[in-house]
Length: 199
Image (cartoon, rainbow, N blue to C red):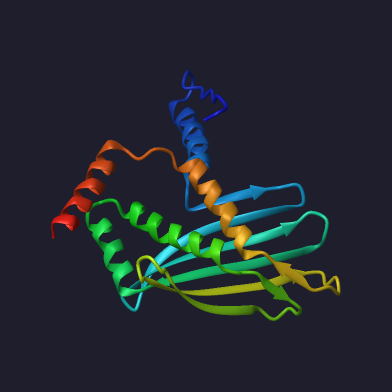
């Protein structure tokens, strides 16, 4: 943390503890956040689930423009293939599910850097793009659904939503607040990798 926090425990322990908990929660939650720039605010969240026994990760963002009375809702859901799902479950069973989620998210971010995820909005109807992409190095595939819609006052103009940039900003913020993994987590990850290499 760059800034110092002074929590007063002298009068009321519970109040001081709540202040400390609230402050730590703001900087340590990698499942949701806010990106504040000169012309817009982006509130985002991430969730994950098993769909038809395949691992799915989903990023949702709400983009508030400061100069225009418009809001954009974007959802990017990525469905993993069987091999990626198997790898995630291995990390989950080893007690480091967060690392499995990290690997899947990084693959999505990498694909976003290499492909055009921009979406043109020319009406209030949600625009949906379905993309299946394979990683050339690993031959793993990911089925991606991008859904974007605009809300608020109609300006009479089309909008081009740069989903690539939204994902990049979310990734940068996650990296900033994740922090270093514990020694126990590192040991569990290394043990899992060694077991896989010896199998």
